[in-house]
Length: 288
Image (cartoon, rainbow, N blue to C red; front, side, top):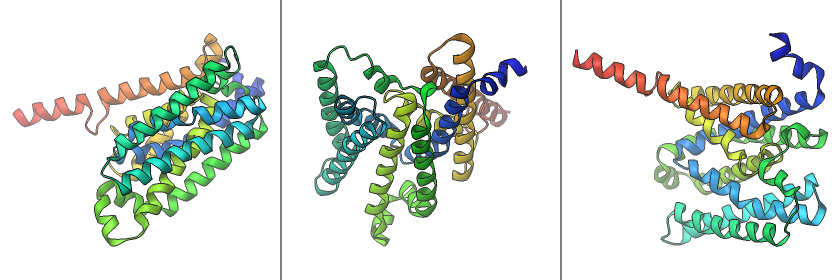
């Protein structure tokens, strides 16, 4: 048991760094995913993950695998899409999902164009699929900083965020915090996706944000319970995914996301809060 569960982290520094990075992402990004799910914006995370691609690609092409350049590029591209789609939603009749879809598709096309014209840069695969086993001190500091900032911001905006989830029109009518809360929350989504792509890649970062939140929905009813359950699912998925990657030579990012997907499937079947088994038991109880 020691050799299977503990020895990889005891013997190898890169495994400890990978686990620490995944824990930081779990603490910062997963609570954001819970609020995305509660606001029925789960696909927004996927859209924003694609939206940061051109910025990260430009940063790579200018400075190589520079943490700072790729982070700044991803932030600029993601924030531009978030702000533009939010602005269009608030000043026109276009709904938020359509506005976001339009801008993220344009951003994705620009990113694919940049990657395609630069041809065979194999290292760009790091942008798409991440390098969780190669995290260095700078990347860990960035991930921990983003996690700390996310937790602090969510704590400060907790009440208006909950009101936005329950009744956004009411919050707009009684408080001027609606716009501030909305754009700050979108900034947190972009920030966590930019941090996440350094470890899991732009294609996988959204997985650790949404899948644990969706799994937690079948185990907890309160928002606090959802956040705690989602973070626990994300951490356990990261641990098991890294161990599977180590013992079976699997790519670490997809292994982590597939374990999170398995947890979601298990929760869908067995979760006591609206899971399939619980609903079937309740139906038989009512018929009896």
